[in-house]
Length: 306
Image 1 (cartoon, rainbow, N blue to C red):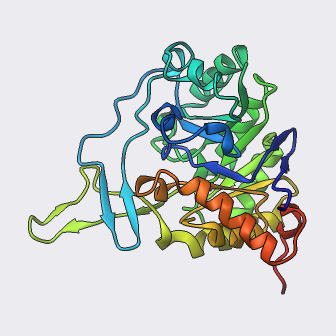
Image 2 (cartoon, rainbow, N blue to C red):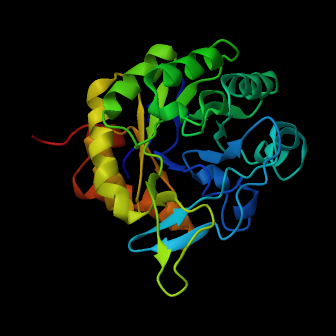
């Protein structure tokens, strides 16, 4: 059996398979399926300073080869996350590598939630910064689609925490490599991508949008070729670990991302149809390595042949 260990800067994962934020809850929901410490890392649903109720329903719609969602970053807020038994206190009992996804509607909110988590960081391996949020002070422009704002929000978070930082990049930009360079320049230790692609679906019988928010984020197999291309571009643009995601359904998909330059991958939408998917992806990667005579998963990172 090949060595599946991967190093992401200061973090060492027992295998390269993580859960994508927003698709695995806070881990507690899956405790009866398997031990969470079998995964490379558990990335929890987004945490902000205050509780968020999210968008009105319907918030999810199945589309061809994927899913649209406009959940609206529903979450318990940082204080409840740190205190209530089904959140961080539970995760500390699992021996899992825990990464906390954070968000805010202003730079101050991002900074405050990062500082709060840093103050009680026991059991938290890293923070993943979701920069696909609308900056209310800038008229709703997303942090992740403005180079200056992307760098600035990371730089401000860097000032208040010593935890490793992963910045989750938005794919809704023309030159993803530029944004990777901007957030690394701001102090990000790693980057993850891609987040969902903006999409829309209409019920032709009712003539109404299928989700109440009108538009939503497209995820699933439909976006995988776009995601692989962007991961490749980012891996060429920066010299920090890259975490790839977007439509990964099995081990073969995961290997494709790693060949493109990802040091680790995140499984997301497929979990809605198969809770055991992350474990199956781990097994699939191992099968590929054995089949190709690889002694370590590190041998395939960025190993695409031109």
